[in-house]
Image 1 (cartoon, one colour):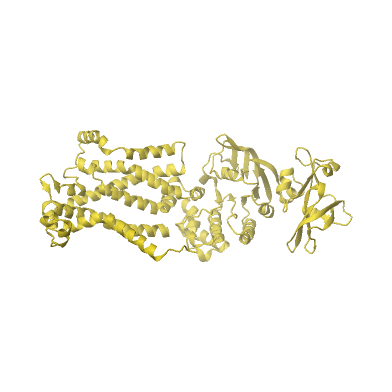
Image 2 (cartoon, rainbow over the protein chains, first blue to last red):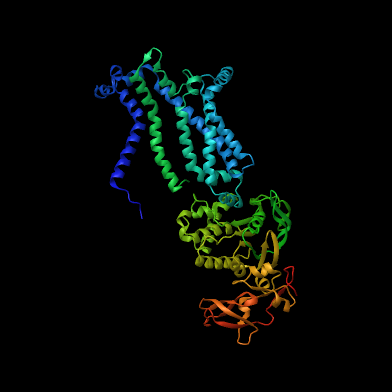
Length: 276
Length: 330
């Protein structure tokens, strides 16, 4: 029998959950609201901001002042490019660690993860010098390489976890059926791991899209993604809240929309396992 | 013909299989049977090539296959978990080994349809494994094995995930399949009933060693040692030690439940402790004092109740004698 929960209790828990959800969402909501206000209104007290006039002026100014399109494409190229390269490296790596583990596999995984525990700023200077000497500063190639490398441990870990869930007997069956290693990965492992690979892909695109340390340090204009676009509105000559908010909204909108839609696709993929 | 010569397997320090010699003739239905952990599945996986040997030679049709990868051994395997590809339809599952062999699609189609007909899967070809019952999944796994026309089939406890009724019917289906295909089959099970009913030759394994190899009736009539005597036959053989065994100049004597008659002038006496009526038979657990508890198979109509005193007689010539080393005596 289901446990009995009183209606009062249900109401309290529901209210608490909604409050929590609202608090988490509030900063994003506030950014969106401020983007539609004039600069003058944006620095008023919160209540005054809410009841002031709505305007598209900030969006207009942002479009005038900077090239959203170029930043957007840079973000797409950097996040998608680095994710695809990371997957190409991580799928075979995770395969071998999940299905032919050695004595040191666990240590290797821990070591890979430990690189994420190091503060990025610790290697800023050597990285910067390397980029300078190889002529990679403000280049997409250099940045794709950096984003690939910093997210690789997470990609390997996620794929490893998903691959671990796949019963080994199915891969043995494929081997008995005459599948080469390539066919085994191509026809059996990958289709079964597609939901896992897809969620890894999505998460990594989001991580790379929002990555703001290396993208800010190593780019100026040519390879600058949307993080640089936002940052350009928090300038030393004064804060422009409304424009900053409008720019932020424009920068996060694509990834929010992508996340929203693909998450539903992902859940479908997981429940049906329906992948050709 | 599959020949194992001094095949060994150890995992680290542990010798799972200390050294096995075995010959499997073409077309034979061989069952590896033994308690769990006896190494029977490991032995099958060594033959399949899914595990590397630690020593010895495995030859298949005269070719040394010891170091060949599984795909090159021309063997097909049916797994306990069925190991179907969940993302492929039944049709694609069965066709997979043919696709891997690069077979022409028309021939693939023909073979899949032929296998589906044999296994009654015709209506399910476009379903996915998740939409099938356990028995149907097992048939798909068998279908995937037979389309390749392998040198031999390897079965790893294929029926242990099925319910009792289905197990009996699948058992018969596999036996019929063997009769029609006449391909070598190696079948691993811990269930001695499956071994007895299906095998041409039973290999009884215990702790990685072969205890006895023989036809089901050879093993039943003349087990080589106490282990085989106790393992083959259901209910288990009665094993009696002490003075009664000494009378027959043996350390242990064995008598099967079906070889003890209830008879008023029998030499053994006991008190019925439990009587199980199966309809066709009645199994009595008789507390026979110094002989220990004896299991007796009586006719289905024999009405005995706990507390009744019975006299029993072993059938002449059915008593088996075992020496101090546990081996059968002539």
